Every structure is written in C-alpha cells, then in structure tokens.
Length: 140
Image (cartoon, rainbow, N blue to C red):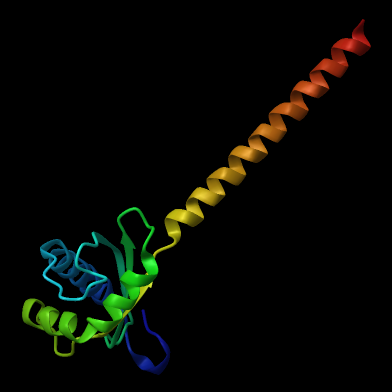
C-alpha cells in the first residue's frame, strides 16, 4: 500500500508506537520524577500514535482516577526532554519521535455513548409498555 509521495506504509509505525507505549509505561511505573505534579501520580499510557514517518508521537495518558489530568499533562510537558532521553536509551530508533502528551478521553466518550444507549432503551421499553397497555384497554 502506498501513500502520496510514493512512500509505502506498513505496520512499522504501529509496532514502534506499541514499543514506545511499553517503554513509557515502564518509566511511569518506576515513578522517579522530580516534578511535583508527577511525583505521586499513577499514570496509565493507553496508546501511542506515531506518524508514518516516525517523527512525531502522540502519547495518550490517563491518570489513575482521571481527576488531576491537567497538572499531570503540564508535568509531562515539562519532562518531555527527559522522557525522550530515557526512551532513546531503551528503544533503538534512528530518530526519537517528538512526544506530545494528550488526555485520553475515549473512556469518557464510551461511557457517554453507553449512557445514551441505556436511556434510549429505557425510552423504547416504556413506549412499548404504554402501547401494550393501550391495546389491553382497547380490547376490553
């Protein structure tokens, strides 16, 4: 498969993203950050999306409990050069991608969709019950 410019893209950027995710998760598990916003934060790396040219990576994170996301993101932005250096020692790539951290809101989005589906199912059930009661009244 080819993209514009004649470059072929395969599964390499996906494998690199998963390798970076695992390495970052190990760094976060160690928790040896001097930043006050990251000192006691438990951070989960849910996904790392790498561009096909492997120059940029978006790291989706979720703080435990999801409550203090903004301070954690600020702390991670301050620690980006340190994290890139640590990753460069652990993952052998020609170029270490530029890291951009983002809060992963897919769980909130999925919860919202689930809530809407439950609400619509409840509305369908109540309208079905009302129609059945009306049919029973008409039959008598």
